[in-house]
Image 1 (tube, rainbow, N blue to C red):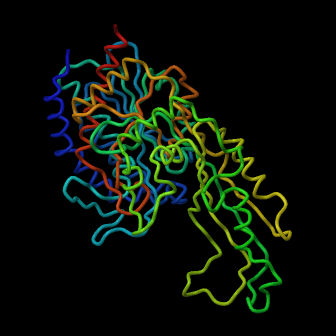
Image 2: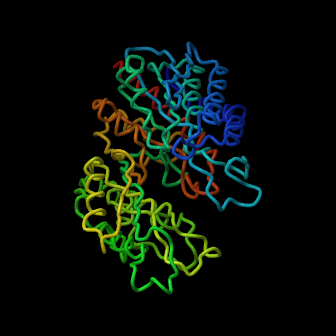
Image 3: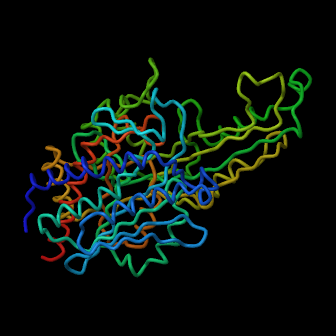
Length: 474
């Protein structure tokens, strides 16, 4: 049966207004921080509350044959497994997560990470777009098809609670649930972003991430700076020297070639098209302080910097008192939390090992240098070639529900599950998309979800599910 586009769009809009937005509003109130940021998550119970909210909502939906289950492995964050039987022998895996980044500072007055605020078309709060809406959108896409009696393949919705910590629990669930997950021929991930709110965006690559805490120790206790400076080397200066082994502080270029890859020609061509669509919005969408210039004004180079080149961020520090508390003391230790984004095809294990070698070798002045790394790091992902049916479907969906053709792009962030799935299901097709666009500020203050985009992305997913079934049964 052919989809009636207008009817499907209206169904999705009604469901978002009546059921999804109220559920997301309650979801925002739950401080379901990822286990990396809440070591006592099990005792606090917030992740369980988030999972429970989605579970209750899922059980209320009139989806034929829907099986809802919370799966728990001992000592690990829970996952939600939602199974909707379908026609034919194919399986679609739809993915999202319900854990959240920590609070951050800088929220607007009368707002906050756990305080849902609706302003026009935007719903503000931590996790609302990254990506608390995913489970609701995935089930609504399935429900919208069933409302029109449009056939779809068997759909499995997997919602984890550890993504913001690197998904370290997820491989154990994928192994334990292997039989029920099956071998999906299509993977739909709703944890990505969009370059604007005017069309559907498909993600074709994701960067990896490696890092850890770099610590420089020079003293067993702090001493008067007047007595020791010029004699005892500063731990901050040594840390600065070490970082210069890794990064050119003038340009931000990562110096060791170990962290670079050759950018595929098709990805450069793709980035060139994105640069034409976005222009200066590549950098203008960020809340830059007045007068600040981007690294370069060439949109193409900025896109490649952000998607296929390594980049370093210092995301935390220790050993540094607040200015009001800083006395004239030569501090004994300085620690920096490093986040090194790596290109999609850079091997994460090798990158972690090399990073440790570079920073710990030949310590200046014989200082005690340690890099405490986070496991084996997270590999990036480069999508396999997209089948013609999926290209046509995504473009048709974008034109129908956004009014413009789709755009494909690389993303500077990471979704650890995609690399894992790419290895396990090499023949699967991927639609990696999302509703987090300009200004939505995932991980930062004032995170919001642009609700009309959430509605349209949901309708587009429904269209792709229907087209997938048709393509599989030709």
